[in-house]
Length: 222
Ligand code: HEC
Ligand code: HEC
Image (cartoon, rainbow, N blue to C red; front, side):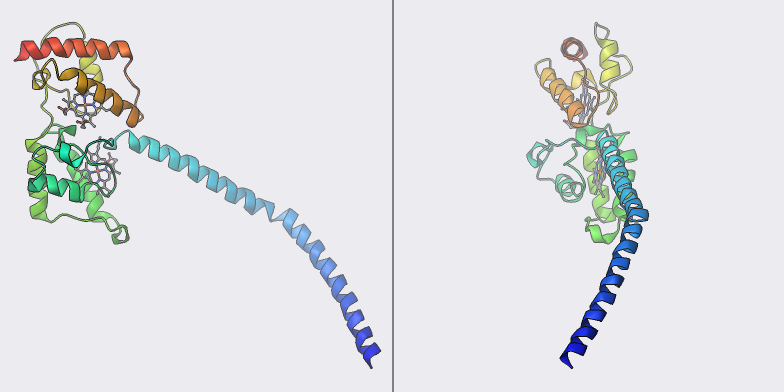
């Protein structure tokens, strides 16, 4: 009895072994034939997604508010406008400075931001301001916006360079809005923004030339 059971068991095992080998062989054929293909495809897709996302992120950084603006750097930090800026405008990127754009420039960018907040899937939990809060926030940004240069820019060496380099991210600033002593700090900060925003940086020589122009132009303008 036991032998037959054992024999049966052995036979079964042998059959199973045969089946297993067939299975392994088929499995190998399947592995060689099909498996590597999806693996390559998956890898390819993953690599593509990474390169694509990398490029998307890099190109987005060209227009992202750079880090470095703290809540205390905001004009009238205790005002409702400053509070709303901190509350609603830091979900996706660094705190944007009201000086990023002129009063005529801001509305265009704000429209884009409202559209993002309104349309984004609620699962992202982005806080959305009310209409009344949007009015206060807009007024705050316009009141503290970048001061744009008049058409009659004071003449002087470096004027063309200033015009070209300092209108890449925002409108051309008014040289009169800072003193000769303050301009170097601002220009150096702008150069840092170029690096943070993955932009082409002006050379040391160009930075010097722009600073010299602004120092002279700020005295002429005031
Ligand atoms: C839902 C995410 C999100 C929120 C919330 C958001 N932003 Fe943005 N913001 C972006 C993205 C993405 C970009 C980069 C693409 C672009 O320029 O539109 C950007 C870019 C910017 C820029 C740079 C634009 C440029 O072209 O240089 C400014 C300034 C800005 N946002 C201000 C704000 C302000 C002010 C608020 C609050 C009212 C705000 N953002 C809220 C996603 C957001
Ligand atoms: C790479 C983008 C970029 C370039 C190029 C750039 N800026 Fe700016 N600028 C910014 C951003 C972002 C802000 C808002 C944040 C801040 O104030 O640092 C700003 C704000 C300003 C402000 C208002 C804030 C203040 O301190 O008065 C002035 C003035 C200004 N820029 C001057 C210049 C000058 C001058 C140049 C040329 C040397 C220049 N910018 C080039 C990005 C840029």
